[in-house]
Image 1: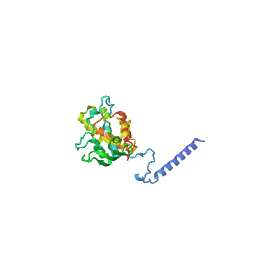
Image 2: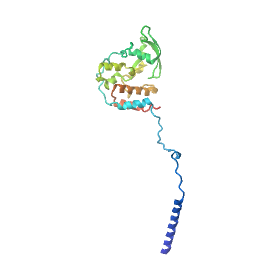
Image 3: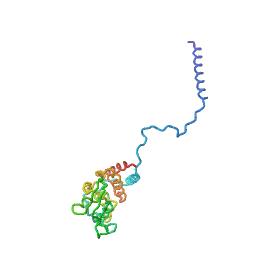
Image 4: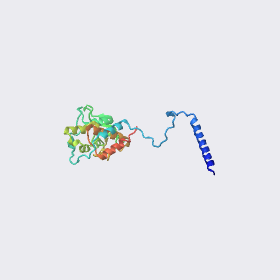
Length: 241
């Protein structure tokens, strides 16, 4: 093809392109859509979990403030180091075992002449097991309902209580915050285990149990070992509203 013809062909093509671009530029601009008119994102990564309960969120904050350490040996622990069993620390004329039974049982009957102190009978809706247990004071029956230390004394000894005074340990062992009436065999099975090794069989109570466990650690400025820290954290993060 002659050179002049090629030049004319290119010029014509460029001219047509320029005309098309000019036509597009001349089009009226479309109004911008308001933000609330835009389609919602369809990403599958959107958060779907429910928020934590207030108590669980507070317990997580308290947990994060605790010192994480391996703790001391349990070899030197003895129950007598925590003072009198079931002392009357609130000076109401009634020991802490009976105070706890009266608090945690319903339909309570007390022994006459004891100023409503000594619990003779009652019904426990046990939070640890979810069972209903009939309590009757007496040989062979009293032990069916026992008083658990939410934070076991031997566990507390390893995580700070070994440095306390005897008065401080006695108060801890009788603090209503750390006492819970429960099924006797369940209390025995719990022994001195922390949350990494023992949780209430009743899964519906585990959030409350861990929240209470952390509250006690925070109140008494106890430390926590890595395994129990992880168990507490995992349980609390599952406690959604």
